[in-house]
Every structure is written in structure tokens, then in C-alpha cells.
Length: 147
Length: 143
Image 1 (cartoon, rainbow over the protein chains, first blue to last red):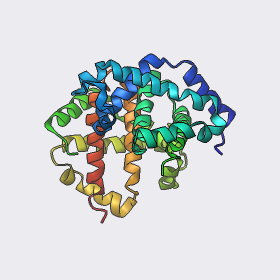
Image 2: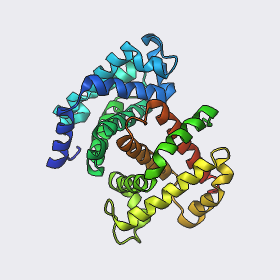
Image 3: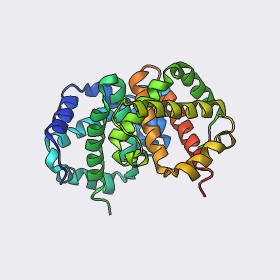
């Protein structure tokens, strides 16, 4: 089981408490599709992804980005059992969506960059460490049920 | 994933905006690397102070960004341009090349915090490709 200090819990809950999902979600997902274009393979049905501008203005991608970001809420509410919390979502990503789990890290890196850009200097090294620890646990849980 | 002319132009344009802050970027990136990836501290056991913003961290951050500046200037031939640095990393410092990815990520995070408007997705992909290419050139002489 993952150990969380009081300080780490506070850091994570406070980032999510002030998170603008409608802004950050679309930015993180569209950045992932632009920076790591092979991730577009999972979004064939989402419409025009032809160039960066198209991706940034695609409403389906924006909506999906918000959905994915809200997917993290479960982890925030269940920090002591993220692995069990995501068992079902892990099966979904493996069996139904067929997503290569390496992609989870790519999206999580883009989310980190978008949060860093929003928070500026208040995204201190300590906060970055906690944030990345949190995302690493989520990523691991999401990959857990692959076989 | 080699650098296209568009990538090189984007890197040079971004570098023009951020290079004045190179020392600060280097210090912050290195501080973050040591905090977020504590295993990287193993390379600096000879420093008296590994805390974020300490004197050795700042000095070394400046040196590292000097290397990035060199890479920008040699962007058309990174392998040859970084040959000497590669030899030093391979034979003297013996840094595991996996760490280049870690430091690159920290540089990207710092650029995002300091230049949020300039670090667009387009600038991000170009800089990420460039840092990967530079890391590859740095690994050239390892074996």
C-alpha cells in the first residue's frame, strides 16, 4: 500500500480543490495528442486531428479531456486504495479500449506540464514531487489489470 | 524522430525568449530533479549541500544550461557538436543515460512554469524532440 504523509494529502486535495477542469482537461489531452502524436491512434472517431490548431479547437477532444480529468477525482477521494479504486477502469482500458499503458505516463507528463504552467513558481519542487507521486500511483493502478 | 527544419526554427525561437533566464532555469531544473527523483542525488554525493537553490546546485545548473546552449548552436549536427561532452559523461561522470530523460522532463516543467504563454504545445513538442536528440548525442560515446 502507498504511504501518504499529511502534507502530501493536503497538497493533492488542495490542487484539485482549485482545479479548473474545463480549462486544464482539454489543455492536457490536446497537448498529449500534439506532443506525442502516436497517441492520436485512440481517437480516430473524434473528428479532425489534422494539425495542432484542429486538435486544440476540437470539441470532442475538449469534452474527453474534462472526462479524463474528472476520472482522477476517484483517486483523490480514495488515496489509500487507489489500486482497488481503478481496477474496473484498468480492465476497461485494457479489454475494451486497448490502450497501451505506456500512454498513461505520456498523458500524466502533459498534465504535469499544464498544471506547472498554471501554477508558475508556486509549483515548487516539493509540490511537483507529490504531484508526480500521485500520478505515478494512478498510472500504475490503471495498468494493473492488463494481462 | 529527427529534427525537422520546423522543429529547429521553433527551438531557436523559444531559446531566444528563454536564454536570458538560462541560469535560473538550470538551477530550478536541477533542484527539481534532485527533489522529485532522489535517486539522482547519488551522482552528487561529493557536494556539501544538495538542497534546492544551494550554491553547488546553482553553479551546476548554470553549467548544464551552458551545455544546452551549445546544443542549440550545434543543432544541425548534435552528434559531432556534443562529442566531447559525450566522452565526459561516458568515461568520467558515467551518468546512466536514463537520467537524461529525467533532467529533460524537469527542464520542460521549469520552462512551463516560467514561460507559460510561450510554451505552447507546438513549442513543447519541438523542445522535447530537441532535448531527446541532445540526450541521444550525449549517449553517443557510451559503448
